[in-house]
Length: 178
Picture 1 (cartoon, rainbow, N blue to C red):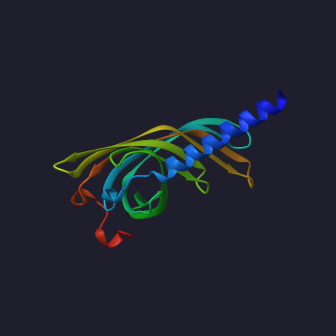
Picture 2 (cartoon, one colour; picture 1 turned 30 degrees about the vertical axis):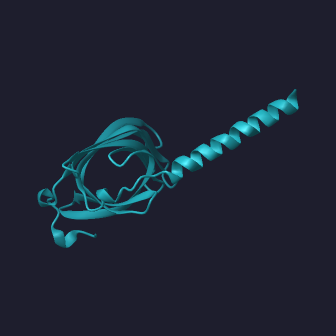
Picture 3 (cartoon, helix red, strand yellow; picture 1 turned 30 degrees about the horizontal axis):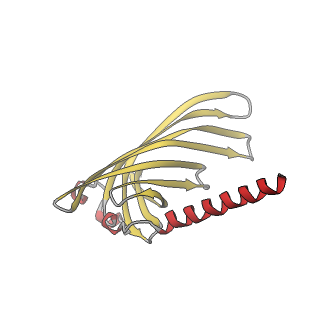
């Protein structure tokens, strides 16, 4: 009986592996998203421990991002945000998880910033041209610790974004990375 269970479980795992590999290979052509700009807002809410006390807090960041490359599995994105009077940028990688060329899930994981979230992109076409899209997260986590002074924070992170025309981007074109 134990041998039959082992063979059954191994068979299920093998089928699951074929399914996952098939889904990963089935990523649609997402090149229509290259060059698209979004305005975004990220909201973080959580609790921080400073070594002595716990404090609730939050933070909001707004800015822009541009999808500049699709390699068949990942989107390459440049994010832009205004900090201390200047525009700053970060490179990000979004992993395609599932969906089609207009509506899909992606994953953003960043170990450096201690965050991860999954979002859904909902794009719309007009006369065969991608003309609008929204992005909404469905779960996000941020964990940030500092061993030097015993600071540690945890919380939830959410992202909302809307596709915009490049002419509405307030970042000076000279500051665009791609």
